[in-house]
Amino acid sequence: MSIVLSGIRPTGNLHLGNYFGALKNFVKMQYENECYFFIADYHSLTTHPTPADLHGNVRQVLVEYLAAGIDPEIATLYIQSDLPETAELYLLLNMNAYKGELERVTTYKDKVSKQPDNINAGLLTYPCLMAADILIHRSQKVPVGKDQEQHLEMTRTFARRFNRLYNVNLFPEPEAYNFGQQLIKIPGLDGAGKMGKSEGEGNAIFLAEDPKSIRKKVMRAITDSGPTEMNQTKPEPIANIFSIMKAVSSPETVEYFDDQYNKCTIRYGDMKKQLAEDIINFTEPFREKVKEISADEDYIHKVVKMGKEKAHISSAATMKEVREIIGFREF
Ligand code: TYM
Image 1 (cartoon, rainbow, N blue to C red):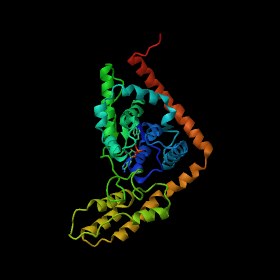
Image 2: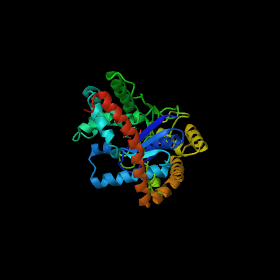
Image 3: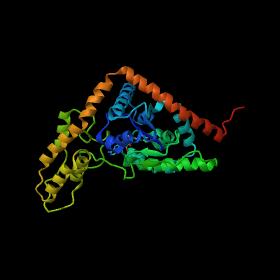
Image 4: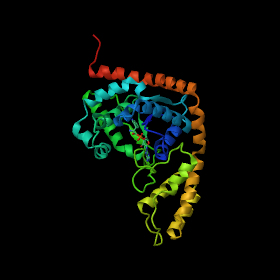
């Protein structure tokens, strides 16, 4: 039994990348571990949402966590900003994080080039806040997608640095986790890169998306003029469609289209039609549950309150020790 933690930023509806990279594993892990899953609302402030959007997105992600199968009676499901201890640990970790190492983080460099007019300090110290999330519960395993690997490496660095500085063994060095398999990256439908909320229109398929819109997006996915040689390597846009298909379709379906590709007889239109229907079938139960849970205000209220109380027990215990170790002692 390990202490497991992970989080998702509330920046809109969850997409297939969030599900296959992270949420699916949360659901699997909750029964055999001490699990903390949260909504990273502090993190989402780096993009300056309006108060109404922030609140609405937190609610939506909470509902989607529950719809995907997180049991709030078993796992601890909470909102990041409900734990002030996280903010306190973040402040303390900032004192031992260096500008140079923070500037080298890939996701930071990415943001600098994508949003040059909003390079705020929160973006630079993003890995410190993420480390605070993880270390506040002294977590050992962190189920995440491939894009979070470097953040985990930073968390290990900060944990080691703290332990060494104060000559203690307080924080474990957490590992990114995917059941002994490689971390996952689900690609987007627009030909290159990962599926993501901040990518272009048509890149991501959302778990709660209506079937009509799913069909439209999949049919518009970028392809090429088709293979010209037997068994040729698939270029990125085509490999991407196959990757998504592997996640949602049966192995027989994937094998069928793979075979067609290798024989140069593939019809992308047929493949996309099949993929759209498989995504729709896969997400159907999820859509139903989102509707049901979203209508139950009392239940949502209860879940948030319970999560906050449960999470606080462990965060308060860690911060008590941290304060004592650092030298914040009572007179
Ligand atoms: P976020 O909100 O961008 O994504 C949430 C989770 O979904 C995974 N993910 C993907 N996996 C595979 N393929 C994709 N295309 C894809 N897109 C997203 C992410 O890897 C992530 O696991 N910084 C985090 C949130 C966070 C956190 C934490 C996570 C804050 N504190 C502490 C773990 C532990 C983030 O922005 O994830």
